[in-house]
Image (cartoon, rainbow, N blue to C red; front, side, top):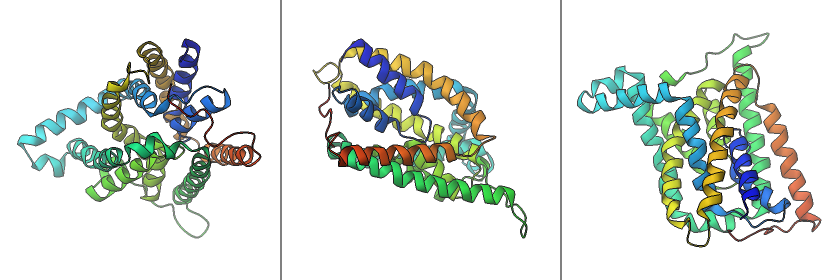
Length: 291
């Protein structure tokens, strides 16, 4: 991998990690369209450490408060019921279990068959439709209508074990490129009745332990001939800087706008990918092979 490739891929990672459009799919597609070798699941996992560092920095006050409350709850279990921050800390742990288990069980598939461009095209379109439905439902609840009052949407303070586990299952779906970690968890949150901002905020918090653990786990592959240390670390730094800017923009965007632009983008990209693969212009295994 050249330094230019690592810069472009780090830029793509930072731009797409927090938007509901799938960073892993875009890294895969960038390599395929540019006729580069697929950077591989290990490269993706390690560069995600950079974007998660951006989450830690942006939400540092929230995370510090949650971690502090969680530690206090170890000696005072009553805090779990009465302290929303302590409860959030425990539910982040609960929600991280599905992706941790499935990530280990499906490791070979994640690094192989799941990177087929036909599967990526399918998940882009299907999850785009799911996100669109969830977003429209949330908008209907918020605005009400001529014949009914607006419905109250849930906030993070309303999070419970069942919802936390469902969020976690949705996050685990993102092991398939094209699904999108934020897209799946935000869609799940909207369907559970949470506000857009609460669903996005919890999505970002829930991703921290899973992504950091995945990146650390994949560090052993860096430098073994599959992933070069220098370009990978450079891409990780680029992803951190760009990712921080994207988080700040995205949190402002969703407080005022819907997710429909991302829905349209996902569906159009998926259909384009189907057309290119169907016409033989692009091989479903284009750019395969980590490098």
